[in-house]
Length: 293
Image (cartoon, rainbow, N blue to C red; front, side, top):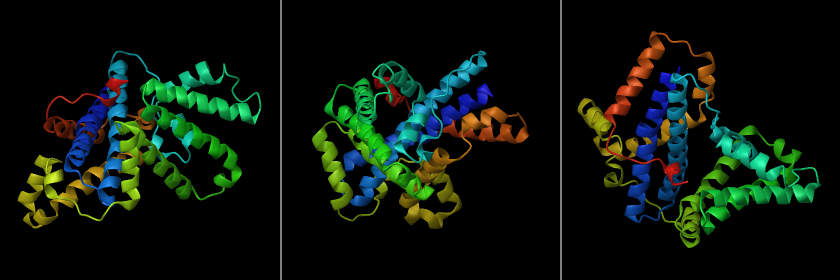
C-alpha cells in the first residue's frame, strides 16, 4: 500500500503537475489575451498546484508507510467541496488544523458572538496569506478566502438549499479566481488577468503553444491515427485538462482507496502502467511549488 501511494504521487507530479506547469509557462510566454486562454490558464494553475502539492504529500506518505509510519492526511479531494469552508477542511488540512488551534481558538473562536467570530475568521486567513508570502497578493488571497467564509455563514441555510452542482460550481469558480492573486507577481497583474477573463477577445488554441504536452504519447497516436493530425492541439489540451479534472474530482481518492486496498493482479497492472508512463514522461528537474513556502 505504501509503494502504491508513492507511485501514485510520482504519477501526479510527473504526468500531471509538470505538464500543467509547462502549459502555464507557454501561456505566459505567448502573451495571448483571449477569454479561452485565460480560463485554460486559470484551471491549469488550479490543477497544477493541487497535483504538485498533493503528489508531494503522497510521495512522502508512501515512503513513510514503507518505513511503518503513518503521516496525517493533508488532502481529501478539495476540489469536490461545496463551499469554501469545506474546501479548507480538505485542502492543506495540517495547516488548517494548526491555524485553528493556534490562532482561531486563542482569539476566542466562535464563543464571543457573530461579530467576533467573523473577525477571527478574517484574521486566521490573513495569517494564512502571510504564511504563504509577505506580499499584497498573498494577503489579498488569504482575505478573499476569509471573506468568502464569512459570506457563506451570513448566507446560511439559503445557500445550503441550492442544488449541489450549483454550490460546487460557485465554490470551484471562486477558488480559481482567488488563485489568480496567489500566482500573480503583483496586484496589478492579477487585476489585469481578471479583466481578461471577461473582456478578452476570442481565439483558438495554437499548436506551437501546446506542442510540448504529451509529446511522446501524441506522436504515437499520430502514427496509429494520422487523421488526428489537424486536431492535436485541442486533443492535447482536452487530454491534460480531462485527466486532471477527472483525477481531482474522482469520489474515491488515493486516501479512500488505501483503506480497502488489497494487492491483486489488476492493481499490479495499474501501478505498473502508471509507473512506466511516469518514468517515460521525465523531462528534467522540476521543483515542487510548495518548496517556496
